[in-house]
Each structure stands twice: as C-alpha cells, then as structure tokens.
Length: 338
Ligand code: NAD
Ligand code: UDP
Ligand code: UDP
Image (cartoon, rainbow, N blue to C red):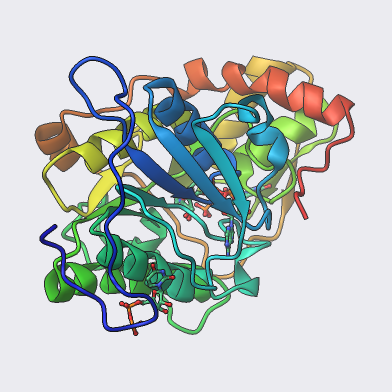
C-alpha cells in the first residue's frame, strides 16, 4: 500500500481482499455518499449491477430510502444513516462523494461541502481509496465565457445567496486538489451540469422537476424572469456513465459532464408541454438574485480523454421521467426524505 499515512483521527489500515466480481475483475468495495439521492441512487444501481459492493452514506436530508428500497436484502448493498460532516471509519477502494444539499431551497443549511469533503478525503487518505468529487457547473458562476471550458475560472459572487453552494463546491475542489498534491490521494473531479430524470426530488425548486410536476398537477409552469436565460440539460444515465468513466480512467480532471444542448427556460417549457400536455400554460415570476444568464458545457476534454459523450437528448429523456413523477404525485410523495 503506497498511500500516505495519517497522523490524525484514525490510523492507516489495510483491509482484506474480497470476492471476485466475475471473470477477470476483482469486486470493488465502493462508498457512495449521498447515494439515497437522485444521481446517487442511479449510480448505485449501476455499480451493483456490474458486481461491486456498495456502501451508501446518507443522512436523508433530501434523499429517500424509496430510491434504494429495491436493493434492500442484497448482500452486496449497505445503507448507513450518517451525516458526512462527522468522521466515519470504513475500509473501501473507491469513494464517490455526492453528499450535498444540492438545490437552492436546501443548500444554505449545511456545511457539507467543506466538512463532509474533508472527512471523505481523510478517509480516502487513510485507506488509499480513489476519491471522486461531484462538483458543479455553478463553479463558473454567471459565466463570462460561453460555452464554458474547464480552464475558465468563473465569475462568482462570494457574498450572494447562492454563494454557499458555488463557493462551497469551489472550496471542495480546492481541498480535493490539496489532498492530491499534499497527501498523494488519487482524486477525480467532475463538474456536473443540470441533470434530470426519474427520482429527482419533486419539490426542491429545480426547473425541470418544477415544470414536469406543475404540468402533471395541471398548474401553470412558473418561468422566472423573462425566461430567456439558458441551461443545458443532461439525462441522468449519461451522467452516471460519465462519472464511472472518470473514476475508472487515468485523468484527475476537472471534467465538464453535461449535455451541450442549450435551451432557454421558455423553450424548456415548450418541450415539457409537447411531452406531457398540450394544454399546459406558463406564468412569469420574479427571478432569484445572481441567476446565471446562460450555461453550456464545452465537453471536448471528456470526449477526448474519457471517450464519453451524452447520448440522450432532452426530447428523448423527458418522457423517461414522466411515469415516475406521475406515480409519486398520485401517491402524495412530497419528495422530502426528512
Ligand atoms: P440530491 O439532493 O438528490 O442528492 C444529494 C444526497 O446527499 C441526498 O440523498 C442527501 O440526503 C444527501 N446528503 C446531503 N447532505 C448530506 C450530509 N451532510 N451527509 C450525508 N448525506 C447528505 O441531489 P443530486 O441531484 O443527486 O446531486 C448529487 C450531487 O451531484 C451533489 O453533490 C450535487 O451538488 C451534484 N450536482 C448535481 C446536479 C444536478 O443537476 N442534479 C448538478 C450539478 C452538481
Ligand atoms: N477522517 C474520517 N475517516 C477516516 C479518516 C479521517 O472521517 O477514516 C476524517 C478525520 O476525522 C478528519 C478528516 O477526515 O476530520 C481529515 O483527516 P486527515 O487525516 O487528513 O486530517 P487530520 O485528522 O490529520 O487533521
Ligand atoms: N427556473 C424557472 N422556473 C422554476 C425554477 C427555475 O424559470 O420553477 C429557472 C431559474 O431561474 C434558472 C433556471 O430555471 O434560471 C435553472 O434553475 P435550476 O434551479 O433548475 O438550476 P440552476 O440555476 O442551479 O442551474
């Protein structure tokens, strides 16, 4: 084991090898923090289905046991209710660190991005695990470069309402690179652009989930501001493929993971209307402070070095989340895991 030792909270340990995952590849033991959430639960499904052991750490702040209930009873799956701002002792090969209050209505409440990331990096250092951070396109702030390349440093307000998320993730990237340079931890950084799909939180205020839920409930879609701001929307299975390609590959990153298809919020409303209900309407509401005017990933780096690119367009992906939303709305699930 060539990883650097820890003089801190826990001493360094090794742990026994484990069962083979099939011909030619050893099964890995993998932690997914935030694994009960939207992206995390889809990632866990992929890792379990390829034969790995998965330990989910989640405090159910926005995640839900329902997202993982189909795995209960699987001997290769474990779920730990734990807040990553507290230290934890585990023996693992890889850490996918997703835990984060990820939407505007939740992310102000919690120091997860700093303390949680530090603890997971400490864990990675102690056991010699590879660590992947799910950062965000929000590190580019209200970008002055368009589309955004990984080399762009961003245009972020340090004292605004969104700052705890933007700056929290920027700090998490800094900590990740510090542990890489200073303690030889193997790290990977993904900058994720807006992602949608089944199991998204129903009422956490993101635009795709808002519009889809509103139309199913026969309410008008709430367009903030003039609706001309743009985002680029990626289907969740494309993101999961990208995260795994990044973890398994040789490159630290950061890598943009997103779909370059760019839409105004008015165009998005039109696609949702076409997909779900042609009688759907919109209403305009005031926009939030510091809302980025446009966002679109340049994904040349991920294409070249990870051999990855998204496959599912917005028009193909939106219909794939409608049944899940309909069922949850019918069953009165407010989408909160607390
Ligand atoms: P989500 O809210 O569905 O999942 C986050 C999970 O983290 C939840 O299960 C939540 O309960 C858990 N969590 C939060 N704080 C925790 C803590 N202190 N300890 C343990 N668990 C905690 O959000 P998501 O969309 O699945 O996002 C996953 C990751 O991807 C986040 O890091 C987010 O910042 C990043 N990301 C997502 C998007 C997107 O569009 N979905 C875009 C950019 C970045
Ligand atoms: N940590 C953890 N699990 C581990 C190892 C470390 O939660 O298996 C936490 C530890 O409590 C500390 C953080 O990770 O708060 C950073 O650990 P590191 O060893 O890098 O720092 P130190 O403890 O030396 O300050
Ligand atoms: N938005 C909107 N109506 C909503 C929710 C959001 O028009 O009901 C807008 C929001 O102002 C922003 C865009 O949609 O310009 C994307 O918002 P979201 O919170 O989904 O993602 P982020 O701002 O983090 O990219």
